Image 1 (spheres, each protein chain N blue to C red):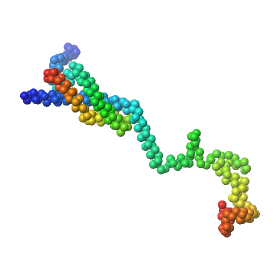
Image 2 (cartoon, rainbow over the protein chains, first blue to last red):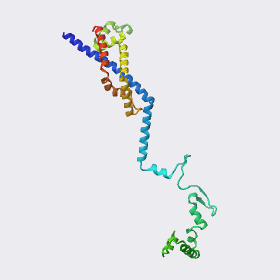
Image 3 (cartoon, rainbow over the protein chains, first blue to last red):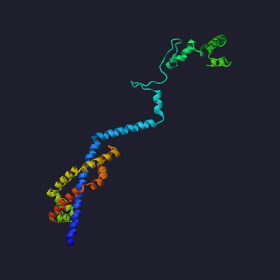
Image 4 (spheres, helix red, strand yellow):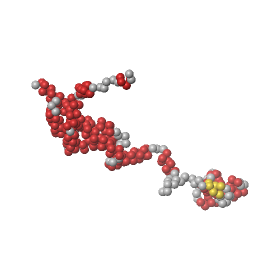
Length: 161
Length: 114
């Protein structure tokens, strides 16, 4: 009797073992198949989810990054051809008035001085006669302009600028 | 006398075979018999069919995908996947399938007269 029972339990154990063996084989098959699909990128759904995840992480990082990127973007705007323009034009050419080499971005201020149209121009070179002439002319214009009530400091401010 | 004449005796065929036999466990013997009779292959096919029908395989595939999503698809290894799904896999075999298989295996063991 006990022999038969022993046999049975050992049989059970054996058969369980065989069964588990079989199941493990099938599990290995499934794992192998899924591994192949994953590595070869055959699962479109997985790819889409991955791509979206990646893009959202990138976007988050870009927003969170306080420094460089934003600044450089506003300073160096990229146009549709992919060219970036520095805020101050850097090309150098010859002034047609004085013949000097001028940076394009500084051309307007240069012309002011060069052609004597600006305030700072001749006022620096000739203080004596033209300065007093300018002061008089400026006084008239300022009265006409109604820009200032004519405080004593007004001319000083004008001359300085 | 030349050295070649004094070679050691060739090992006896019978002497080597029986020690090997004695060292085999019962489980290994059964396995050998299963394979030799072709029953192992039948059982494999049966298990596969049953597990596919019951949706077990699909569940396992989903579990694999989840794992791949977590770990990133470039780094996964087969071993990793197997380790990840085996506990769940073993536990989720439908009882009916398990019983059918165990029954068949036990019949085989009994008929193998061990």
